[in-house]
Length: 448
Image (cartoon, rainbow, N blue to C red; front, side, top):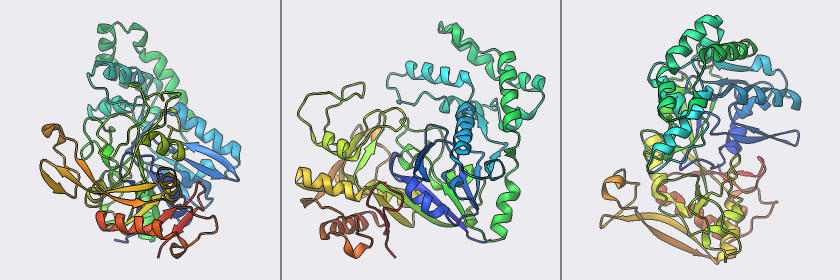
């Protein structure tokens, strides 16, 4: 089988800047596929100088020779999907109707899923901090075999109503039992509304198998734009503070309907410092002026985490929530290398880390942990049992650096930046091939 698939995967908790390397790889791709998650993920692309925030449609849609697929592993908020399609058309991106394909097997997020998302979070003593977009409940219905798929939208209205009636029975009872009568779903109105959505989206809904098999047989490049990241994986992440799908490479291949034999290259993406949205362990997290609700505390002396967050502009794209920030964590990278089979690393925000170093006077890199009285070089999966967060062991670099806009090669980088990269490579075991040195897609050094 031809090995023509490149997968781009996050190595920590998302927000690593996967869009930059995805854009580069998609330029000469035949197919670009989104495989997991919902509109809780996404990235911003630039077309003719206009920034386009996309949460469902693959960013490769900006290239006229590329066909973009939303795979069966994705869950879809149809209002968001339709608004993105309209935005792309208004921006002047060509042939959307012929180049966007949606797997009929992909599942749909319905209004009651969002209500359930809020309810489930309220039930928990330690909430996950979900985006409240109905992602998890939609996946739960999928696993319970009562989910509504894109194919179902093409049924008659009566057939769709019958499926929705079956799906909402336990949910409506839960809403009634918890005094949420306003959330009780009506199968008639939902069937009518989503049948209309089906008519609008019918031109995109298809069996994607022939597209994939033809591209593999013809040895055409296929790129999978990964969503979320390793530590958010349902099976391999910081459970229960995880997403509801499998964004590691094996799960991404499954969600894209791709065979593992076709995999050629895995590019892991990380930031030169690290950040996290929501709750969960973060060994290298720095102290910051953020209250218990995740809001910035104003008019206080900035702490280390505040300086990193502000220099990196680390606020949620949609929620505007301040992200938790900390130093580069290489043991997690090393674990991600083996769980996802990472071949090369793309390190973004190398310029930002240099500015952080100039502001603080130092840059730190976590190269190993002290955990249960031992020094280890991997991320342990039993911290819920040990009740112990691994203690970072750091290597410290004095000062920081500035990367000039004229810097286009690895050799031109400041020596201290090169030293940082060498430390990351040695501790993680992953060669750093791509370096993000600025906000634009072209601010990327490729190290051959």
